[in-house]
Amino acid sequence: MLPLSAAATPNPSPSLPQIMLPAPSGYTAQTSSVLSGSFSSRNLSSAWGAKAEEAQKALEQDGFVDGYGITMIDLTARHGLVEYIVAFAGGQGAMNWLSYAVAGDKADPTYQHSDSISGIGAYDGEHNLYPSNDVSDSFAFVKGNDFFVVGFESTRDDVLNLAISRAKNQYDSAPNSTIPPAQWPENANAAASPQGAASQDARFAFGALIADAIILALIIGLIGVVVAWVRRSRPRPTAPDNGTWSAAELSPDGRYWWDGKEWRPVR
Image (cartoon, rainbow, N blue to C red; front, side, top):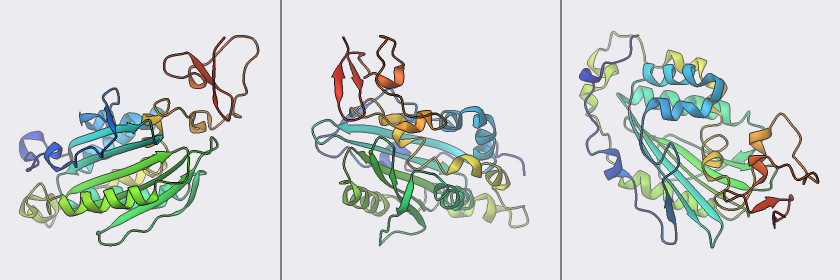
């Protein structure tokens, strides 16, 4: 099935920024992330690294239309929040992404257990524990033709209720769809092949989408923790004694290094 052309796909209405909930009290928006504000399928697929081209192809074939996200931190509580919305041309494309999230996330080595939530439609929730002892609780869910991710990260195990509350509020406040169901590809042409064949090839990467590759990648360095996923294939680094530092060991301003328990000034 060929990707839909831009001319054949209506713009989401209401727009994705209008759907996004406002920032929680005490949180400050970060604008340096590729998922802060409007983003393209290329921005989103960049999380797959060497497989980015394949991931982008899958997104396009599933009917990617638009994306919008926010990245926020609360330095006092040492919490981070990443939330984003992806509008697909139809509900089938959004459900394809969710289906492969369920399979992929449970294969992630940082996956601990599922998170449960009530009062929303199709969803996947998970709790992750990272080698740095950071934790994240996150939910991905579908409403109509839109795919949502809401995830909190913390240096303590104290964000599940925050993730549940925001996910439910986001689901309740979102419209039933941003593209009328009559215009969805699966409804407009019932004889056409189902969307999303390329999503099966993207399963290798989608398991990281909810928390591992997106949420922690965006928040790393912002709330004063180091996440070991960036060096998954190598042991966790110890403090160097030769004065040579890698970017992953340093705080964003380069003034501190992480010794595994706390930030220490660079001398």
